[in-house]
Length: 321
Image: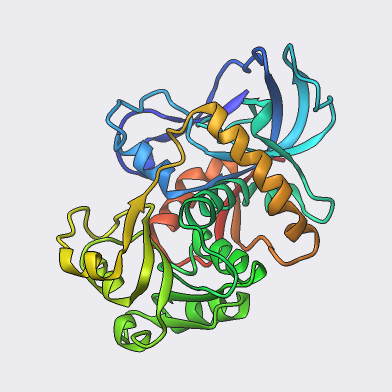
């Protein structure tokens, strides 16, 4: 099969299209012929060696959609020919990938393979962080930083669909307009306004932050009593001193999560809950994929360049024809 290989840690130029053996599905796995794959910042972090291991020889890619072409032993739900999308631990930038069958979701009838492949990583991350752990509920106020990112557009739509009031920050008026069209009550352009001042009187119950740095204390001051601050990244600073009395006075919970290293059983349970709770929202159009641009697999380096530039709204995708 053809696959994009990380030849050594480095910039986009280290990505190379090579021939690799087609995987054989193990017990409990299905083999997917990949039709589309999502591009995520985690792929860039992996390419740069950011996970503490040499990425040379690895195939990036955390989410795919395609057709089941082979089933391993003890797979009962899926059949050859089924259209599925899936969260994976890597290997998505390839023509075939073997996946834990429990981590697959049916491709909704209304979606293309590209649209379906844009959902698993963001939906499972948002559901586990904002709704399971952060316990966002109807009637509460929610703030997501990076509102126009893949995570952001998913979080805004899910919050609105489930009865919360979503607020967001983004880096341009165009991005803010897109967030508000998706359902945000208000999106603040952080380059021209101070989001803390704008939202000072709102009383936010849950914040999803991927920025860190000096956002941390602003977030704490914005949170209502018993508020929850959830981290999934720290792009502007991993070390954030904060004012402990603020946490004590408001009884704030500060936490965070990384989905990629969670074990297979956790991801299986999460996938099942997402199918039950979120997939019906896709069917009704309350959660829509937001695809910014789709490139062929051979242009994976260009896709990662676009990701790093940060001008996109929604997801960057790779297609395999």
